[in-house]
Length: 271
Image (cartoon, rainbow, N blue to C red; front, top):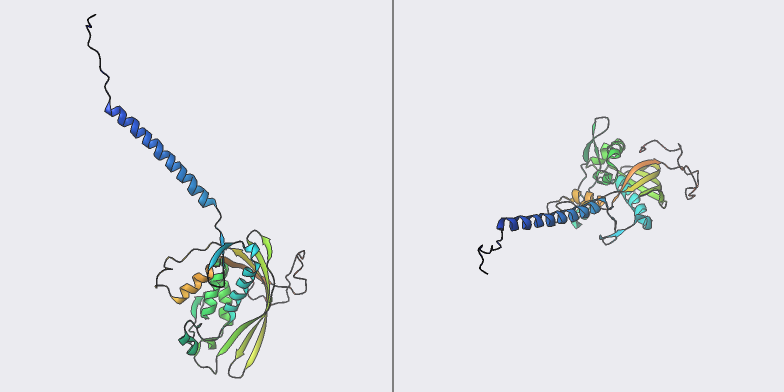
């Protein structure tokens, strides 16, 4: 039988194919963005691990609850740096050890608005203290540090040292927060006549874990020694956020003791 109508050939519409391919790619990109968004959200909500500084200057991920000695050493070393004043800068090289450089001090603005100086070691160690507490603490250090400390006359120079008698094991008071008791004396010695002044320093330190970030120039030689010291201090991921008087009339080691503070000590360095 003869066909009167020609057979209609099937044609492919390139525009339609392009539309379907584009739509498929958009769906794929949307799925990829969704997966990336969920991954970023999980990373942002994840608590960063704490790092403990080891003796060989390396760090490892750890839990401070399992490393109470790290917390106790942090408080002891911070306060030792805060009150060990020799009138000279800390020795960094062998030449500095044989020929110490005089400490000219760091100028600060006290809470009262006055400009005073504090020893360089105190200024560096103060970065282990919470920022809202740091300036007030440095202000009291400036009141205590005599101007004679920054003179080059050794006959007038006054040295100060913190003698720690006992640092109590840290007590956990909240998640990522601990209390450390310190029994110590601040000893001031005038080199001219070897006269000594003893100041009791019995305090409770409240410590918390914090985040720490590497200095952006850590792999270059453009960092000063002070910057290195500060960032090494912050790398311990701990800070002191409150200091109170330590009451020695109670059994500090008794975990059930509700109060270990009393008013027998001076109100200095109290928050």
